[in-house]
Length: 321
Image 1 (tube, rainbow, N blue to C red):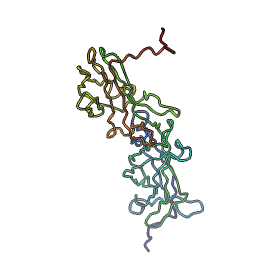
Image 2 (image 1 turned 180 degrees about the horizontal axis):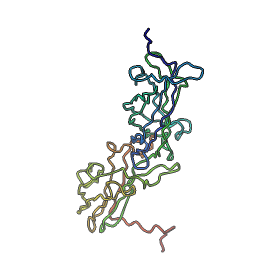
Image 3 (image 1 turned 90 degrees about the horizontal axis):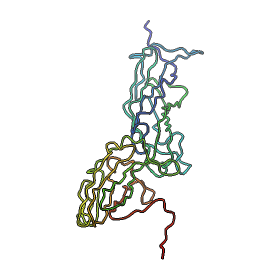
């Protein structure tokens, strides 16, 4: 008589690799709002066993006898960090995950290996995410693994948790600057991150590159009726002109680029307003400069010519009669 194929009684799962993040979007960290993926992809092993008191691997569960397919794996996609609470202290910080194509490898020994693809993760750049730097934690939870013969998996749910990477909440900032109309005037444009108490210069930023045409806008009342102009526009200052030159910008040098305006000349006093224009390329660096709770604001600064700053070391000054 012919003997049919053997059916396993159940599956057991084990971790091949939890995987690891670390393909940082910004060399050493990722900003909230910036997309990143794994450095090492997570993998899960599924092994077929018989119904013996001490179960034995069903080694012929391979090739056409192995009925597990990728569609038989149900994985819960995380929507929040597993551990990190946000600024309100009660809700976990939120994230988006875009799953990539997975793989299922027959190990020809009664087991198969499920492999995650290069899933894309983005922590939301929102009010509750404005917290100090943290190492992210994500649970990839298998809730059901059942093949077409209705062979089921024991010990579910079962989670893999990739090793975390550093997440920083950032913004772009433009300093105000003022000085003589007889000298060039540098303006700092920099990235910052929230350190848990306030904003610090993000000297580790090596992923932000700015150019004056796409990412900077200029305006003042004396040029084009005050409408915003590209950052390389020559601006009218009194009877003179001034043109900005952007340096240390691709990428930023220790998180800082410098926009240096040429001197407009003697008695040519005035100002140039400077605004970032990063929403398309660097939306994760938008700030909440209008304090409305939404991180959707471009940074704004002003370069003023013909103003004397005075000494930073003076505590008190009064006129002498």
